[in-house]
Amino acid sequence: MTTPSNTSSTSPFNRKAQHDAKRIAILSEAARLFNSKGSRATTLQDVARGLGLTKTSLYYYVRTKEELIFQCYEVTMQRQHAIMDALDKASMTPLERAGKFFKSQFEGWLSAQTGDDVHIAAPLEIASLKPQHRSAIESEYIRMFKRLRSYLREAVVSGEARALETTSATRAIIGATDWVFHWLHQLERSEVPSAADAAWDIILHGLAVKDGEYHPSPLNINADTERPAQGFDREEQHRQKQEAFYKAGTWFFNRKGFNGASLDEIAEHLNVSKGAFYYHIRNKEDLLFACYQRSIAIVQRIDALAMRAKGTGLQKLDETARRVFHAQNSDLGPLIRYNTITALPTPRRKEILAATEDADSRFDTFIVEGKLDGSVRDVNSLLARRLMTGAINASMDISLWRAINDIDEAAIEYFDIFYNGLLPRESSRETTQ
Image 1 (cartoon, helix red, strand yellow):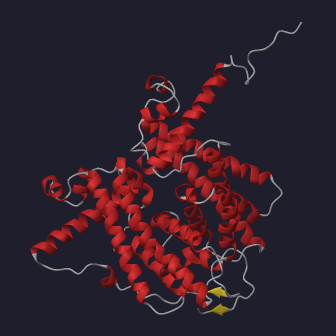
Image 2 (spheres, rainbow, N blue to C red; image 1 turned 60 degrees about the horizontal axis):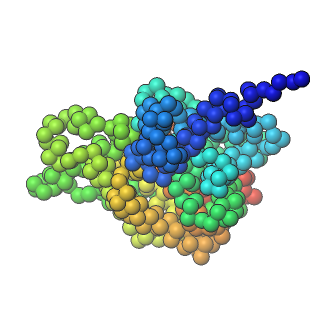
Image 3 (cartoon, rainbow, N blue to C red; image 1 turned 90 degrees about the vertical axis):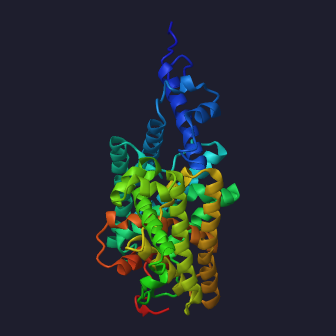
């Protein structure tokens, strides 16, 4: 007679299986809350409550919120590499692998919404992790980046893709998908698969309508048009001090995240006393909010320049993106990375997102204008804008990924994938829009 085993992974008596299942549920619920509310607004009690657990029972699996964030990001990286592992074993071309990976970001979100899979946290706050945790996640993120870049490089070598700067293209692609969790909820769930196909079509074919490659015109960056005028009156001196605080704050928030940035450290960086600093800045949340306001104001000035400019819709779109890129990667910037947006309380976050949406809508205007004047293909304008603004947010740290000798040249190479796509163009002749 055979004695039934209670060690099967499906057995209700298998403690390890029960522990693993509960851990997966905890990380999924935490990821859902982090994506929707942000880590700062999410407490361990919120996670426990969402699962019908006590806070004490949650401590059995995770002791601190930072540890919970780290574990969520670990799962995210494991998921990304598992997708790539499967793609590497499949009979596909390099570009087909890149496309499947790109679309998997949409598919994963949809599966979580329908309950067919767990929620995966968007790794937006890596900078705020403890050094050892940050190093571990960054290492896996870089490995993911290199794997995707290898798909593009192999496609270029084989002739499947046209020649392009693959490091910039990879960063742009990843940036374009970083925020799908934020805006896909605006679509009907049934529309998500077609949105993924349409988004990849933009990456493959680009926005430019002509057969030959779109070659941007030289761009004259006049700092005076994007930098507020300087003066010597007391009010202007006060404004300039605040500007210095906001620029320094933006740099620290971008590099260290909201939790990792310290007001005392920022004051020391500016070589001002804590008293002088706190006279202008009451607390860290106020500083972050002001940093977002400053960045939006810069983008609004850039938008205004483009609205007055002559040229095709594609030219205006291109020049606007390049000017923002320049502001992010020059002395005019940096601009705030939206990875810290969830650190703001809901009312302030909504205010910033509404202002951002208004500023970003200029991209829709230029794309529609381009479709009318024949410079832009017939694409979904809102979808194209979402991809480009995601990539723009990711371009802030492009110097960490590649050497930058000329900012505008780097901008042209970065946005090239959105205008000319990955696939070879029918004509290689130089085209002036």
